[in-house]
Length: 327
Image (cartoon, rainbow, N blue to C red):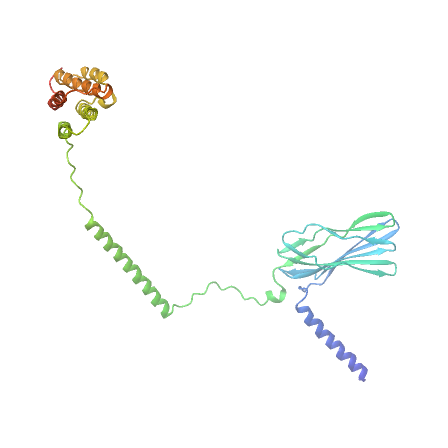
């Protein structure tokens, strides 16, 4: 073999190696490219539209080159390409610029989009149209529709997958037994501590107290009147009669059930007169003491000390006599 022949052979081998290495990081897929063409006419000008996918099939996430090419007749000018919305399962890289070059009978317009499919099966590529102007005429031509087919795995990868043998149950190690025993000990200690706290809480719980019987109404009245007897020299006369009236009304309400604190003296006299269990003499003494208290409170009447002490003794005599004998 001549020196020139050997040089051409080594160059071909080197070029093949470079192309193989470049294919590892570029456009994925092993299927051949697919080309779809359509001829259009704008007046006398012929236009050939071409859609090319390389490769025609890809796997999930593979980068596939989608090249749109328009061969324009003489005098035709192309505007910016119009691309419709891509489906959600398709990702498009539109950063590559448009390329235009002259040809023998006109010009060639082309642009490359890099697409990636993220759904199995056919994914329809978006519509693409190109505005064309020839002299004073203008129109928009549409590239032929195309579809990207996405496979789950490449044939080489699918043959390397082994059949699924189900979950693997590894044997327990010594550290697994130690951890399990430690956790079980913690659970037992926590249960024992909770039982101890529950028993201690029950032992500290106070015994239910014995409720005292309610104090008799007569004792309450006598205690209030005894306090008035002690404080009589130091309190104003209207305050004295105010407290005397409250004590008598509270006693009457307790033994008769009549709401004496909410009634006027005249209303209370009427209610007590209609209550059969109320003694007439004690009722009259009660009303007399209340009327004297009203006179001191509302009329600002201040009687003699002896008369006030007499009203206090009259109030003391009412305790135990208001209810019992028939009216």
